[in-house]
Amino acid sequence: MTQASQWLEEEQFETPASHDSKRLSFLKFLVRYPIFLLAFGPPIFRSFETNAGMDTSQAHFDLWNVIQVVLLFAVALRAILRLGFEESIRIPKQIRSILRLSLYLGLLFLISVVYSPGRAVSAEFSVLNFLTLICVVEFVVDCYRSSPDWLQCLYHLRLISFLLYLLVVLIVPFRPDLVLAVIPGAGIRLLGNMVAPVTVICPVMAIISAYSFLYRLESRVRSVFFFLVGMAGSILTQMRGMEIALMLCLAILGVAWAKRSRRSAQLFMAGLLGSILLFSGIAGVIGVERIWNTFNRGQNASGIASASGRTEMWKFAFRYCLTHPQGMGYIAGFRSLFTDSFNPVLGAGVKRLGTTHNAFIDILADAGWLALAIYVIIMFKTFALGWRFAKKRATERLAALSESGHAVRCGLLLFLFCMLDGMENSAFCVPLQSYYNYQNIIMAILLGACGTMIAASRSPQARLVE
Image (cartoon, rainbow, N blue to C red; front, side):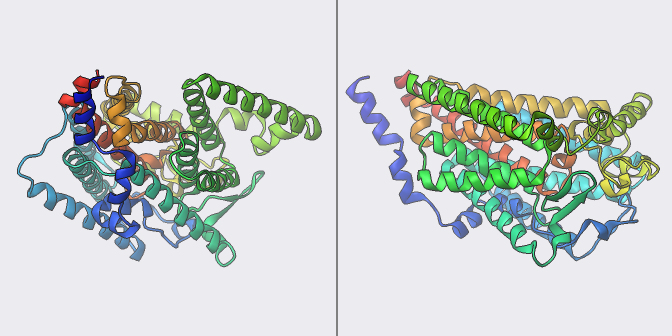
């Protein structure tokens, strides 16, 4: 590389150290990027029993619903005003196509209001879906114009997750019914319920911390602390689907890190071998059968094969949509048409459960086959875009200097977790749910970081690096 190109890089792109002077305090960061406020939920101090016997396919509201909606409206209103005062809105075409598809999907949800058995509920959630999309668009536009400190975005998302988990733990001694669930045959689970979903906040903490530890992005002590908290919380939920999704993401992270150098590969293989030996020792002492029963919460073969009764709900949705390709109506349709006559292992009617427990099948039930196809394409295109820039070599040095490369790779792992966990949890596609907000924030980080890398790849400095 010539002296001129080195000089240009130093002039145009900041080093990681120079980002420290730009980092905002936690409160200032939330004011600057209020989309992260949606990660708080906010917490709802209401137990599941409050909805017992209530037909959630029909309109109803209480104080907590009002607080949720007001927060989303406030963040979305700010986004609308900022977009309205923009002289020009620039979004790379690769990202623009994903956002356009999200708009089309929202329009299908809105059209489903016509045939929904709960039109008020479907219309309300359609509006909330559009408001969330506006927040994502504004964040992506803002990042493309002025790149944020991407590591700070990841760390503040982790900090919000930690604060929510701390709230869940503090509530346990006083109101365990708000955060604990007693499942027959599975014991007590720390789920967080409507206060904060432990099944997403803890895996997010674990993945971000593991990535930061391996790539030495912060203090090792801090990374280990948050990782252990995240892993401990994830185990306490006793949710198999989430545990499998988390382990797969951590395994992918480990393999990717091991490919960096021979020393990394040796450390990874040593750790893998040690884990195998440790597990073998535990299995020898406790017994394989006991471990298997613990992992499956004591379920029999039929319970495991039916995914705790979920396959019955999936069959119902498929059969209905074969004769009604337009679906049942956004959110309200499945809640109304799949009646309380079915009582799965989860021990409740679907009007209390509310969903099919699969994000993809829930989209199918909401607005039919076309909506499912669009949703799958959105997920695929978002992942493919992230994968492209996670592997991109031409702008590798520029991405490292701007830290957007780390945001893309870590964001890709978080997004993959949401997709995998969505195989058994449809809350990722239900507005106002914390799962839904987390997935949209992660998607916004991934798209925003990719936009930063696209801008960097088009600069003269990127061509010099090539």
